[in-house]
Image 1 (spheres, rainbow, N blue to C red):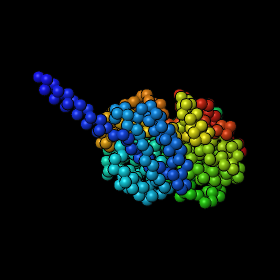
Image 2: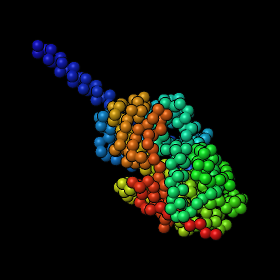
Image 3: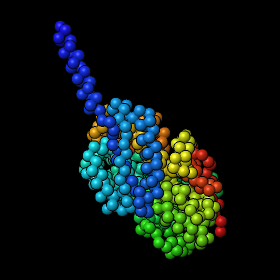
Image 4: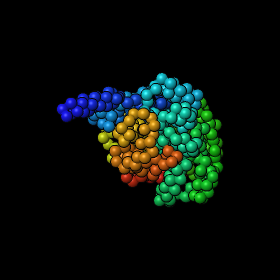
Length: 406
């Protein structure tokens, strides 16, 4: 009997020791971000949020279901072209055989290319990119945390028209100036197909350019000739947004003369104020998949202290929330392999924790990989700062419709 008990004790000790040796000391998460070229700024800001999330996770004991394994971020530059993004994804997959998940690649066109690579490798890939095509391809390992471009257009435009009506404005004509990135097409196409007609508006100007923009003069000349009641100014690169806004004001069309609505974070970045009078941005609005707002004050304060971020744009709040989603998937699965993480992502339904960092307040993905109940944020430049004005639960200021002057 004693020998049997002793044998059991030895077996139990051996099993425990084996289990302990099986637990990884660290779990790698890949970050494929635009860290160079014309889209470097949004990539850098997403990295800030991801780094803070990893820091907080590790300070609070790591991944508890994995014996306290620390989270390690493996960063790769996606560059500023489709080819560079694809090549970076291939290098990441080839060099890092033990990744649990990947996040990136910021710009929809680059995300479309990168996910072709990670899907073949069966690596779960989470992205804030907007293009509907990202999750229309039947991929099983891609998860979209932002509302798609089509969903943003469908939700935002009626709200903006209500705001106009509340100020006594009745927009009848719309102009579009946009770069040719995938996210902008996702936002504009449903408007041209249906939304403009439903709202009783007519498209009178459509200017599409390839970034970076060298000279905004010809485009703005055509804007001056058409004089739409609303301008959709859709440029992902901060430099392009700045150039267009300066030229619009130079031609006497800014500061409320034509109300300006953007999509995405390019027009809300702090760097747009470099050598530019903040007054020129007063009243400009943007529809964004995510943005810092009410309830995220602690994160905003740490970003300001650590990275000197004057306000919390889409990148850091999404970067922080995404790494926290991956952490929860690891806790649920209790394993660091991609298949287990993917399964956890498919089955999770969170209304707390990471959910507070995403409009809509829920982290659940549908069969396509889109976040269920994904909301959006409308921000508006007021007194030199872009402030969340919609939805009410995130708003830090009240929206106003710029009065059109002649």
